[in-house]
Length: 440
Image (cartoon, rainbow, N blue to C red; front, side, top):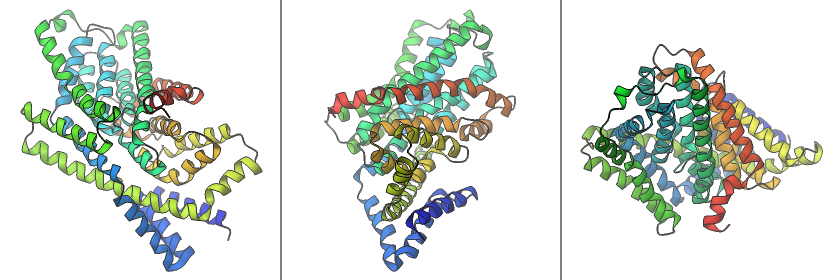
């Protein structure tokens, strides 16, 4: 049997195991280990062992628990509640103002946590009930929360971009900076859409009544200070890193300590908050480590088979496809996989194949990391089986049906596709900031 056929069988078996409900790391790592043993005998056992050693020696891996702990501390200590109250008071008089404020809330939560699920949970539990109580259209606000949560894996410190950096062997700092402008651009496009839509159809997002706007200016300033606390924590972490004063791991430790200190100063660091934050940090960090270990093993076997070169030869030489056509086909495959996999699973499944192929085709791997994050979030929210759609259904109140959730997301998916097209056609949208800071 040819090595190309073996590679296809490996990929097919892995997808089959995932569709039967097996754990992601078990399906990927199991196929890799068994294939290595069948191909190279007892010598194949060195592949998972060397992958484990490589994982343990990755110093940047220490950033994962730090960022996850920072996010859970800020979430569990209800500092996000202060954020929403700030947006509620300052943006309420504007048509659609609370929905626009919710997008701002999601941007700051993304900077606090780096996980899209966290933004979804906070938006659904804090913002959604308040928006419905203020007579906002239920389809509008459901779409706002789902779209806003998509910024979690694009705006730094994105945990998924850290994983991509490790698997693709690219600098984390450059990937974070590459995600800044596309993330802010997408947030601005969401805000523009909401503002125009609510201007044309005021019933979708009515301004707060006069009685609700009567908040003393001193109270507004107090809420502004409380709401800007996460911005200060983010700045205390990112400014030293961007200026080269601290390493990535040191900056992540600063962020974790700053979040912990803020919760202590505000009197919200209870034993329960600390225990939940530590437990969740350990659980998610261990999950990510197992997934990375499996991806490294699978990639080593794939590389040993020469599958990447064979696929490149198939597409470019035998089929005569343009590299841009191949890239678009790769992005479309994410939309298909997003119907039953999350962003991390998609990354570790395709990374052994796509990342080397992108490099062979001559594209920038930093730029491709941004394309990947945007495409996976579109896949997350695309009916009928988008991952985020069912997360929202589980968190939404009974009056919001699955049909409402499906209908709510379509305009925002259109906005995200437009943002993806802009980054695809104008790579400097993603690459300008890392080029400027690092002089690439």
